[in-house]
Image (cartoon, rainbow, N blue to C red; front, side):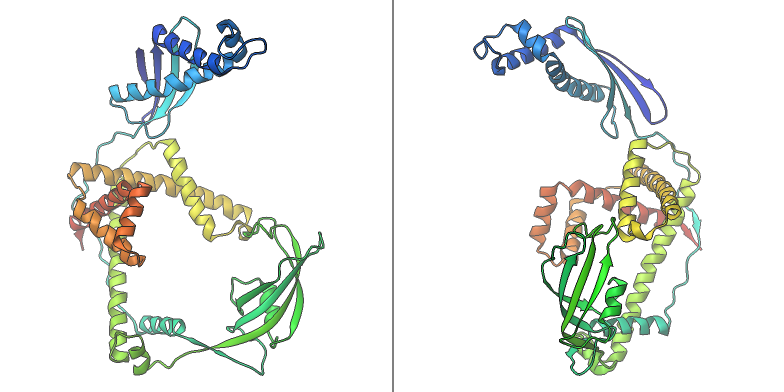
Length: 419
């Protein structure tokens, strides 16, 4: 098998392979025999049709089977022989086949770029002074208070914002005249995620009372069952509950189960805020260090990996920003920002990976096990179930890779000059 590799750019290569005619024809004849044994040709018993008729009738399919059989293995073997590590699947852009001649293959693929690291130790960064205000502590207390709120049944008045409403909802498609299934729903009145007209129609309704309203759903509505439909709803209030906030006192603190009094609770909140800010400050320092290293480097990035990172970034972004709420120019700006972010993320990943290699950083089995324990605790799952799930889904290497990147970031922070 003859071959040659051509460098097209820093990340892009083209490989040309010639598979010997004897090997090609041996596989070709094997595939023809396969087709012959299965083919149903009028006038011939299965497996008895002449080979020239089989070849004539199924030639495109035979060639496709030949390529599928020989090309992937030939490329894989050659990559190993030349110690090449493509970042993705090679793209075959030329195949030349003629019976009795070698099979000629030409394919393009991308590789990780080679680059030299600039100085990454003793990088000067400013430390952020950490403090906690009474306002921040009080805000956390109010959030705790809201989560601990009780909902008390009320009578004799209509719905107010903040009430939990149990209602019966009937819908009718105004185009098809068909009725939707009747639903018993629980609604938090006034919540911003509710349709605006629903919030308006609920206010003032007493148990037993009902109102009608129409919703014209956008064709891109997240609920595909309703997208593009115009529905007339009838909503009938069954019952309602109002939020009752507890007093912020020693009894409230004791009710949370861990604190002797309100002062003790405030101290714990203060420590948690400081811990959170310290982590945030450390993350900021790490990002500044990586940026300073990155700014000194020009790296050509594999286009396919940039595209994959870009698509993942946009998917996460648009999941929190529904497209119906975005103007066209805003969406275009997000795409530009997404491409920039994808390139920077990939570049940072390459830098950290190379630093880890240079410093011989590694992740032990014990560290991976500790990460499993942390995942189990965070998700309130048995450790055995987490380990079993990770192994079944083949995510152990991903977890190890993420831990190595974190360790590399910690290494950079430890060796920085923090002023």
